[in-house]
Every structure is written in C-alpha cells, then in structure tokens.
Length: 210
Image 1 (spheres, rainbow, N blue to C red):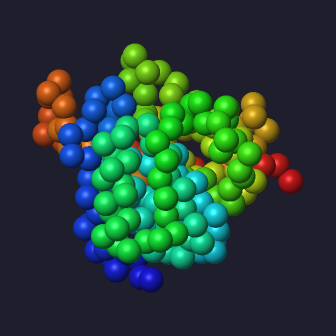
Image 2 (cartoon, rainbow, N blue to C red; image 1 turned 135 degrees about the horizontal axis):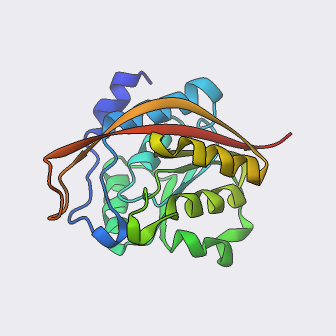
C-alpha cells in the first residue's frame, strides 16, 4: 500500500467523541500516523505478519493503520470505555477481524493476564505528561519494553530527546530516532489559549541489546 493511499484511508477513522483531559486525549492526525507506520514498515518490516500491541490506543488510529499494512493481529489497550467503543466501531467500518481492543490501565497491564503475552511489535503514542502527570510517557514506555520481544515504537516530544536517550542507556536498550514529525495539536480543551500548537515529535525505535 502506498503512503498516500494509507493516509486517505486513515482520514476516515473516527476520533474521540468527547476528549477527556484527565487522560490527555488528543487525536493522532492521520498524516502523523501514516508517516510513522510507513517508516516502521519500510525501514524495519515490523508490521506485516507481526503480532502488534498498541498501548493507549484511543480510537485506534495506529491499530487500524497497522492492520492495513498487514499486521497478523493487533491488540489495542485503552483505559477509557468511550474510546474503546469508538475503536471497535472503526474496526467494524474497516471490517477488520484481526484487530481487538481491551479496556485496561496500561500502567497496570504487567499485573494482568496479558502480562504473559509477548508481542513482536509494540506501538504507543503515550500521553506527553502534564505537570500533574509528569513522567507518564516514560512509564508507558517501560511497560511496552516489558511486553515486547521485538521492537517498541514510541512518540515523544523532541524537547525530551536527551531524557529519553538517558533512559534507554539506563535500561540497556538500543534506541534511535527513526523519524522527526510535526504534530499539530488543535485547541481541544477550554484552557488552551491558541487555536493550534505545532509540536516537534520524535518517533523512537527501541530494541533489546543483542
């Protein structure tokens, strides 16, 4: 599938009906999702035929895209039941029978039955972390690494690049930025002062040391 075709398909994916600030819910724009997924597949072939986990999947933008690029099976994990409902509706619209979503807290996932499952590829666009939620992006990443026997792909603000690099060294995992993206965040919540904010975002690839 060509990049443009993938983006056109992802533009039809339904988004959050009413984003919840406590979960830092923001839409993953179709052009961001398709460029990230296309990089993952074309550079490392980590989607086609793979068992994929999408942590904090929201309405399923990355999960649907991974399936369209040939993932064997995709499991989404999302804490918000409303987002889970939208996710399942998106799967029905695309007639995806190899994609499922479970309602669960990502940070408690290692304690659940899913902890025994390991995945070829783990995807996440984690909450970036507000002042009240500082460090949640790194906490999500830690869970992802615990559940992956292959690669983990995660989006983080470019401003945190050195912090993420230090964490990778601390955890003894190989880490590299495979794409630099411009994430346009629209005004979503009442406290936002601007119509939109352009945020520089890194797409990281993490893998266990050989």
